[in-house]
Every structure is written in structure tokens, then in C-alpha cells.
Amino acid sequence: MSASIQSVSDQDVSAKLAAPASPPVGLAALEARVRQDLSWLELPAKSWTVQHTHEGQTVLDVAIIGGGMAGSAAAAALKHVGVKAVIFDRSPAGFEGPWATTARMETLRSPKQLTGPALGLPALTFRAWFEAQFGLEAWDALDKIPRLQWMDYLRWYRQVLQLDVRNQHKVTAVKPRADQLVELELDTPDGAVTVFARRVVLATGRDGLGAGWAPDYAHALPRDRWAHSSDVLDYATLAGKRVGVIGAGSSAMDSAATALESGAARVDLLVRRPDLPRINKGKGAGSPGMTFGYPMLSDEWRWRIRHYVNVQQVPPPRGSTMRVSRNPNAHFQLGYAARNAWMENDEIVVETAQGKFAFDFLVFATGFRTNWERRPEFAALAPHIRLWGERYTPDAADADQELAESPDLGPVFEFLPRDPDACPGLSRVHCFCWPAAGTHGAVSGDIPAVSDGAKKLAQGLAGLLFGEDIDTHFARMQAWDDPELLGDEWVPSAVPPPAVKGSA
Image 1: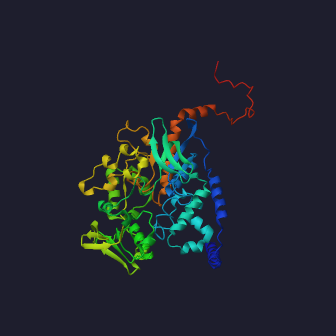
Image 2: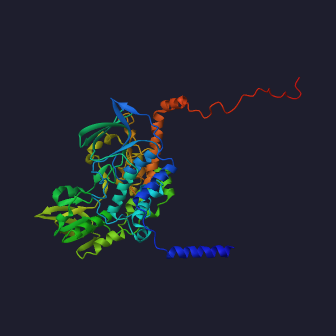
Image 3: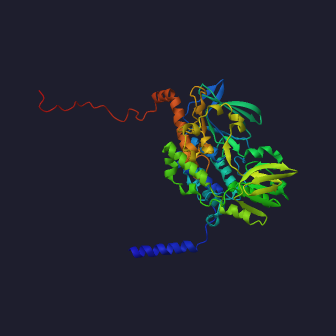
């Protein structure tokens, strides 16, 4: 019998291989599947939070600042647990996050099969979205996800989940209060407004608590002669110019390639290392164990892991590097650490460890740092936030400025105060952006584990909101009067119980 079954199985497989590929089902069918999946899972949960008001104004349960991938995933996870969240984003609709604005890579760096913000729902993955439109054969042929296609997917994600996104709403001030509220001041298309929320989530991206970092000597140069790789820049203005790119990571390759493709006469990448990093150590450690176990580790181990990844550096993708190297006017200057730069006549002179270069324009692909001065909207918070450098002191050999400047967060990504009495309400602001990595690992800014981070955040916020209104929730339970039994299911017995044997 087993041979017969095997024979039939082989015939079935051969028939499937010979059959033409099934046509794409289309987005309408996929959206119907999303709705069905949510229905089967009883999602979203019914709204259960207690409505609060302040001075006649409705108080938001949760306000999320930033409508990129992390903000959208957080809002969706909150909606699934029955908590209403409103996203405020300064960008026009459909341009949240960096993907269609300042990002310059051709494709994402992450493997295409990562499920990203899908929150465990197969029909919400990029793969499902892609195959619904282009089919399985196209998916199999795809190497990496095109950057602008990822942005299209995120637009669809927000639409299919019906997230409440308020675009062109720029938050200008975040003010925790002592009355269990956080006050937000916003610039909107209708003018300045103030809203109140019980909890605020900062989903503000890679530069979430600061900005792109450049060395001090950059700031002594004319501002129209240099840019950070994260700046908005019209690269067409670099046509015919000699461009220097400081750095060797992914953004350095993307900036160099964009300059070359925009007609730059020559691009030199000034790299302090004698060779490019080749191994992504963080990728090698990626596992559910790291995702869920990292926050449980000792301070020493968390610092050790994040510092090791920082020191080793993440190599640029092979495709991004070859995008640069295929240009004959691209030059990789290895071991040329930039030390200083100044203007000489109309040239930028850059002093390196091995000599000087002359450029017309510089791009600093030098990463991001926490910089409260660059984020005036957080002025009411900044002086009171406890940092990792105040929590843990490593050995001198393991000193790490980026880690030291990272916020020390609580279990629900909340800011912790230096002085508990100095800024009442500080812990009502939650840091769900890249600087949270020191405390919680890479669950709030990168594609691989953003769903895990979003669900952790949403569940924690639901618990906090519930606990704050426990009296009301208990009263609701006491007042619940939906009967399971109507009283007509039985008749009281008229027969007395049998006598106990041996009784008098």
C-alpha cells in the first residue's frame, strides 16, 4: 500500500510541476483574506478602555508620534488588544518614514522573507502582498525588496488595517504632567492645536532622540558644502563635482552611488579601516532566544552584546557596494580616516591619516546620536531622562558613547527618571524607536523583530491602562447582568433527600 501511495504522490507532484503557474489573486482577494483572518482570530478586540476627558476635550488612550513602520506596527498591535491609538506624522500621507524621502538604497537590506510588521498574520506579510499582485514565480525570482515597493506595501498595510493616521501633524512639544496626562502641542494644517493623551509612544525612527551625527569639524564648514547621509538633498546638484563620502556603511554606499548616478565627476569614500567589515555579527545572533532573552540579561551582558555589534559594524550589502564599484570614477580609500576639514580657496580640504584630499562637497555617512538639542520638541523631557551611562559603567576598553547616551527604559519602553520627583508623568512617554535597543534589543526599529516589539509594547500599555482604571473595571464587572441561565432550566426538587443509614 505504501508503494501505491508513493506512486500517486509522485504523479501529483509531476502534474503540479507541469501545470502553468496560477495567476495572481489580486489585492482585493488578499484584503478579503485579511478580514477573514482577523474575524477568525476575533481581532480586533472590542474597545474596553475607560474614556477620559480634560477640560471638555477627549483624552486619547495612546498617541503615537511617527507613522513609519514601527509606529504603524505599534498602532495595529494596540488596535488588536482593544486600545485606540492615533498616529501623528509630520509628513504628507504616504510619505511617512524614510523610504520615499531620504532613503537612497535600491533595495532593502533585509532578506525578503522576513515577516516585518505582520504581527503573526500571514496575509499581512510583504510576501502575501507581493504574490497577490505578481504571483509565485515573480516572488521566487525576487532577490531583495525594492525600496519604493516596500513603501507601497506599508501604505497598503495602513489602509487595510484602517489605522488612524493624522498626516501633516508635527509635534512641537511633549509635556508630561502630574495629572496622569501628557500634553502634546502640534502644528497642523488647521493651525496650532493641543491634545492630551494618557500614554505617548515615540516611534520616531533611527534618529528618534537626536539626529544624524557629524564630527565637530563638519560644523565649521559652510552648510551648503556638506550634508549628512540622512539629510534631504538634491543629488543632481552634485553633477560634475568631486564628492567625498565619510564612512563605509550602508548609507555611505547608498550616498556614493546616488552621487555617481547623478553625474558626480568623482566620488571618494574615506574609510578609516584598512578593510571593509564583511560579517554581519548581529545577523548571526538573530533568533527568538535573542529577541525574548536579551531584555532579561544582566546589564553587563546587554552592554557587551550591543557594544560588540557596534565595534564590529554591520557591513554594507554586497549589492550596494557593487552599485558603487561598477563606476570607474568611484574610489575606495581604505585606511584614510578623516581627521579634519577646512575651506581653502573654494575647495574643501580633508586631512586624513595618509594625506589630504580636495573636494567640492562632502557627505557624512557617520550614523546617528542622541542629541536633545536637535529635538526641541522633547525639551521638557530631556533633562530628566536617565541614560544607560548612568545605569552601568563598563571597563574602559568597552566604553561606547552611543550606548552611554541611550535611554534607560522600563519594561514597557517607558522613560525612567533621574529624580522621580522632578518630572511627574515622565514614565507615560514610551520610547519605541532605535535608541531603545540598549534596553530591549533590536525590536523597535528593524524589520526582523518589529512585530515582537510592537506586541510587547501593546500588551504592556493595555495592562497599564487597565490598572489605572481598575476601580471602574471592577464596578463594570459588578454591574454585569447578562445572565447565562434564565431560571427555567430546572425545577427545584420536592422530594426530600434519603435518610442517612444508621441514623436514629
